[in-house]
Length: 414
Image 1 (cartoon, rainbow, N blue to C red):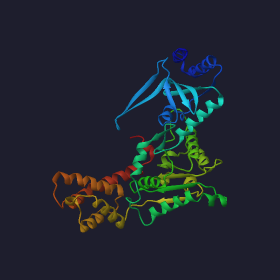
Image 2: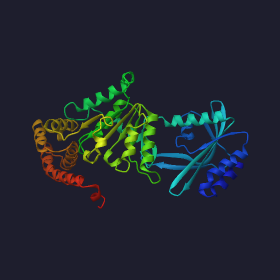
Image 3: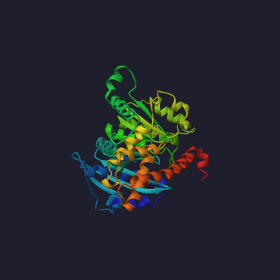
Image 4: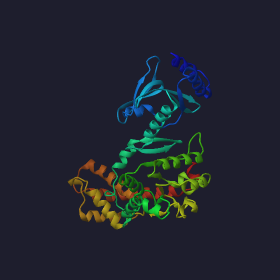
């Protein structure tokens, strides 16, 4: 009943006073207990319990507020504590954990209080929960709006990407694989010769030429923790705060891959200096491979683009030439049913007609033509339909290239 009254009193206070009030009252109510409190996002005792690392039971003497949400994609109900108190059994110890949640402005504040017989038990439990939740297992860690979240869906999408179903020019895809595989197996050599064990890779090329696919295939093959930064922007924190957070978590997760897709949109004149300090400043990014991509290398500061110690290797993803277009069309053709499949002469013909097409536009050519073919089901007609589609797609290509060449200020006025 004491905890029930405490929760009700606290939630009636101004939001800036809630955490202090709860802390003070708990210390007074349980003077013989050790108390650990905070709002560290890695302290998720429910997830820890679901994994069988401890057992938790809701205290029946109070009303435990459990929020229920619906995952429409996987048709799954998820339940999580909003305001609740749990009795925890962990490694032979009994603890109590109070979880509270309230709204402060535009933010959701989540706080916890751990009560245990000794400070050592409370802190050891806290550390164990945080360390377990911080591990990246069959998921990608995504940074957005100033927070890290785990994405099993993105991890599953990455698992379907391989170098076997990727067409690139010359030895490019083998060079990329060899580069990073050698890096992760060469730590003793780096240390023996006093070379910092870190790596920076930059994928450069216009959209649709395989950068993202190569990135996914690389992560899939390396089998290292992946941290993906969507944006350094957030409502309540500066870019510099979030850049610091991103690199700090990468160092904690090393050896790992830190992905900065569309680097030119992440780094600007205001945050560039801080970004460079985190990338290769005083903090040692030991075991961190930073893989960045850009469609617009001309928008990157020379301090990022041209200094080798920041991005040691730059891989260029060019428009496919005749050889790559033929290989790509053959790869697609092998997946088609007999009535839709192209002849060898048709493959060569389509490859000639698509000079200047990116891989993304070649894919769109196949998909749009297949949809048309399914409306008529005429054997051998796919080549004719693809040839007819090419002119329209070429016009779209010109429009897309014109839009991408416009300065950001012009785009923002649309």
